[in-house]
Structures are given as C-alpha cells and as structure tokens.
Amino acid sequence: MTDETHANLDRLLQSGGIRLGRAQLDRLSWLASQYGAPTLDDITEGRRSGVIILTEPPSGAAAELFYRSLTPGSAVVIPFSENPGFDFLKSKLTEFGTVGPCGADGPHEMWWGSIGWSKFLTAADASTIRPRIVSCYPRGSDDSAALVLRQSLERLRLDCHIEPIETQLDDRILCFEKAEFMVRMWNKYREPLLFVETDATLREPPLLPSFLGCDVALHKWNRWEMSARTLYLGRSVRAERLLRAWQQLAASYPAIWEGYLLDQAWSLTTSQVPLDTVWLPRSYHALKGDLGATRATILHDRQTTTMELGPDPAFANLVRVARRAGRAGARDAFMVMTSKAEAGNGISVILRDISASDAGAVAATVEAVTGAYATDCGGYGRLELSLCAWQEDVGAARDAAALARYRILEIAPGQRIANDFFAAHASSDSVMTARHLFP
Image (tube, rainbow, N blue to C red; front, side):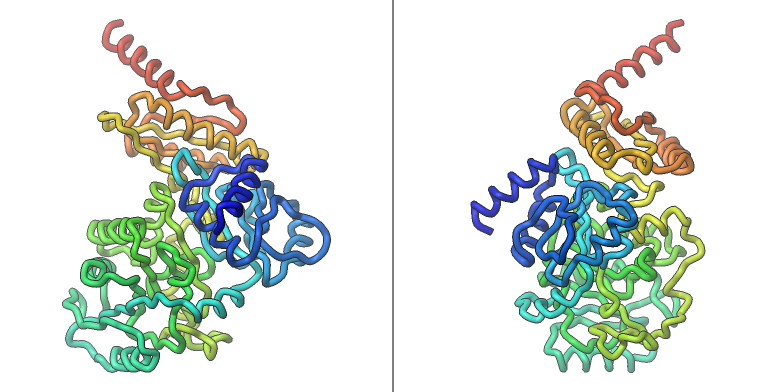
C-alpha cells in the first residue's frame, strides 16, 4: 500500500476510535489491497463491495439486511470481535480468520470474513509460496496410504516429507508423537509446513494459506472443534510459539485427544501474541461422503459420520458457542500481558456483563485496563483479562484465577480505570498484609 493509502486508513481508524496493533493493521491493509478502500459502519441500503469495518453489532433485522447486501467483492472486519454482540452476524458470514490481541497497542481481537471463499480460492492459484507437505504414520504399519499420498503430491509437483515414526501404539499416532514430528520438521525445513494425515489425498495444490500469509491455518469441525488432520504453520515466531505450546501440552497430557490440546494451545497462544489465524474452508478438510468432495483440495479417507472427528461430548457448551463465533471462551483468558516486574505474582481482571453492555463501552474498558497496566503494572508480573457475559462465566474465571493464586478484581463496562489502577490495588494489598502481620 502507498503512504497515502496508509494515511487514509489511519484517519479512518482514528475517526472510529479503533486501535489496532501492527499485525492487525497488516491484515487490514492486505484486505484493502484485495477488496478496495475500507469504509466504517457502512450499513446502508443497496449492494456493496470493498472492506466494511463494523464497530457496533447490528440488530437481528439489520444484520439480515446487511448480510443480503454483501457481494463476493466485499469483506467484513470486526475490530472488537471479542464482544458476543457480534456473534449473530458472524454466524451468518463465512469466517476467514482472526488476529489476536496486540497488547495495549491493539487490545482487541480482530475478526474478518465475507459471504464465501470463492474470491480467495481462485486468487490463491497465483501464489508463489508453496508449503512443504509433511506427514507420518506408525512404523511397521501398512504404507499403502502413504504411497497414494506421495503419488498425489508428485503429480502436483509439491515438495514433501513423509516418514514412518516409532509409536507407542501399532495402529495410530498419539498427539505428543505428532507434535514432536512437527517440531522436527520445523527445525529441518525453512518453508511453511502443511501437515496432512497419511490417509489424505491432495486434488489441487493447497496454496490458500500461503497466499493469505497467515501464521497458522486449520479447520474447525462443526465450526467449533479444532481438527489437527490439516494443519498449516507459516514461518513466523508466532506460529512456532503455537507449535511449542501444543508440544508441551501433548507431552504433559498424552491421553487427551489431539484436537482439544490444539484448541488449548491456540487459546493460550492467541491470548499472549497477535496470532494471525485462518480458519480453512471445508474443501481443505473434506471427507468421503461430503457433497463437495469432488471439488476438494484435500480429501481425507474418512466418512462424514466418523465420530472421532467430532463433536466431542467432553467440550463444554460455553466453549462451543465461543468457537463458533471465532473468539476465546469465557474459561480462557482473553488477553495475557506481562511486565518487567521481577515479582512472580499475577492479577486477574474479570470484566463482567459484556453481553448486556454497549460494545463501545466494553471496548473502552478493555483499552483502559490494558493501558493502565502498561503505564504502571503495580508490581504485578502478569495480567490476565477475562471477558464474561454471564455469571456462570464469572465463576469459571474466578476458579481459574484462584487455582493460579492470582489477585482477582471484578469490574464492569464503563467503570473508570485510572492510570494507577493496579498500583492502587497493590498498595491496598500491602496495607491488608501489614494489618494481618501487625494487628
């Protein structure tokens, strides 16, 4: 983008009171280069194109009219997408991706989507960056599926690495074994990696993730449960951080299903760094029996009714709703910030009643809390901010903070947050401790 275009984008964001971090600005700039100059809260009559930035959730009727007005040449960006008020509109759109919070500079999750993938699926063919396809299977097992996969990759002239690995079980690979394999591939190769299960067949070059230039790309089964059968990792520090988190969780909990561990690694990583995530279309995770299987880019040798792919009954309903809406659940910290304070203590701030409050008030409170922590951490080495729509969410967030032995503060949207907010609470803690020691 030209300097003039950047300047126009900055003025537009300032007029809407929108604060975006560097990674979020990069994604928005990229979208503008694909769709055209953005407009702000453009909910008007008539067909539209270009990038539309929404800062307030439309009502049900307005959301329906807005959805009907969109064309394949339009994209929707929601810079405060952590707010559940946007869930209804997002459920009607095709979710392309999210960019996680960027600390105090961009303390919100940015969501982007449209009415379908057709524009990008066509444009991706021109991508010059090709991922290396990697896969593994248990040593000593039947390698016929690996041979079919390799032949499909040779036909498409794609570089690959497929190997048998030592496994605890003869017939399948456990999550920690897959994660360790991926770490080895990350260290061995320099290009982006695309893992697919050995029973998959590639019909077309899988160029969409590299064309989009994201950190990580994967498919959400039933729009909420993450699948590790197709997993793309771009060559970025943030992608490596997700991979390492997944490896550590898998090593600590080897009996837990890989999709759930990937979900938890993603939640942890996106709360700490602005992870640029793409949610791959079904054509990158097609199963035999799917209506669109003949047009699939990646076809897995599983029937559509395969229970091991989902839904997992162990997932809490609260998490399912949040994942469908492309945001972290109430049981996960929305954002984690660290300070230079040497103290190992942490503080958990719970922002309640966000579903019943104005989106602008919620966003302003998030910005005030993160800004205050960046200005004066009060000696707290770590801040975890949780967004809670219901009282049940508040209880879950409190329980999690108590397990971590964090100081817990509960606030409401619109509450005044001074720059010395954390220092003041740290002082009150010191006074209470002194009174306890010296009555």
